[in-house]
Image (cartoon, rainbow, N blue to C red):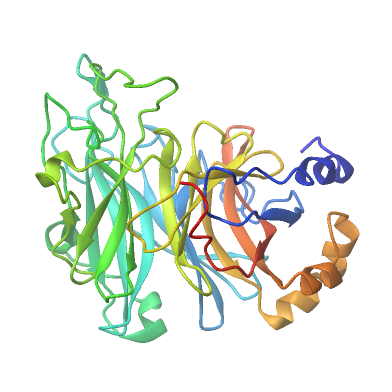
Length: 394
C-alpha cells in the first residue's frame, strides 16, 4: 500500500459519529498493512478470499473462508479451512464444499459462499453453515451468476473443538445430506422487500437471552425489475429470522404478516452484506458487516439491546478500506503484551491510555482488494467496555 503509517494515523484519529446509533465509538489503533494471506501463498487461487469467519478455539485461531479460485469468477468456489496459533502466521488445512461451477442453472450447488463455524452449546458441537447458489450467467431477468441462494448446515461428527478438524460430511453425499436452514419463500414477481433474485446470501445465527435463536439474514435484489424505494437505497437489505434451536426450524421474522413479507432492518440503507453478530460484554449485541456503500473507507457496525431491535449503523475507517470483516476477537493477556510496543509506536494511542480508559483491544480480521486479489489482513480495534446506551437514538 502506498499510504505511509503517518498518513494512516491521521486518518484513524477521525472517530466516526455515533449520533444515529447506540454503539459506543470504536477506532483502529494498529494497522500493519501487510498480508496474512496473499496471492504468493495461494498460487492456485485466482481471485482470493472474500467472506467467512475467524474464531478462537483450542491452540489458537481457526478460519473458514470462501475462496474464489478459478473461472467462472464467483462460481468456481471452494471453502478453505485455515489455522493459526498466534493470529499472524496462517496455514491452510483442507477444502470443504467445492462447488460444481455449472452455469446452466440446474445445480443448486454451482457456487458455495458465506461459510461460518457456529457453536451450539446445547449439543456441545460446532456446526458448518454456508450458502449454495445456482448459476445461470447473465440474462434478461437479472444478474444470475449467483441466484436462488439457500443456507445449508451440518454438525461436526465429534463434539467440542475436535469437531473443527472433521470434514463435516464432505467425504460423503453432502449435497443430499446437508440440512437447509433457510431458503427463498418466493422466486419471481412481485419480489418482497427483503427477498431478491439472489435468494438468501448470508445468515448469521446468535442466541438470545431467552435461549431461542435469531439471525440477521441478507439478500440481494439482482432482478432487472428492481428500483430503489428511497434515495441512495442499495440492493442488499437484511432482515431477521428466528428459531427455537440453532438447527431450526427457522422462520423469517414478521410479527405483523406472512414471513415472505418480513420487514427490512435499515442498518445501512440497503448496503449490508455478510453480518457477524457477537454479544457485548454487559448487555446487548453488536453486528459488524460489509457496508457496500463505504467498503473503500471501512466496515459497518450496529448495536441492539436485545438482538431483535437494531439501530442504524456507523462506519469504522480502516486504512485502504475493508471488503469483508471476519469478526472481532478480544486479545488475550499474552497478545496484549505482544502488541504493546507496536500499538505505542503506531501513534494513535498507547497501551497505558487504553487501560486507563477501561477499553478492550480486539483483532479485526478482514479482506481487502489489492491488485484484483482479495487479501486477508488484520488491524487492532479499541472498543470501550460499555453497556449499551438505551437512550441513544436509533
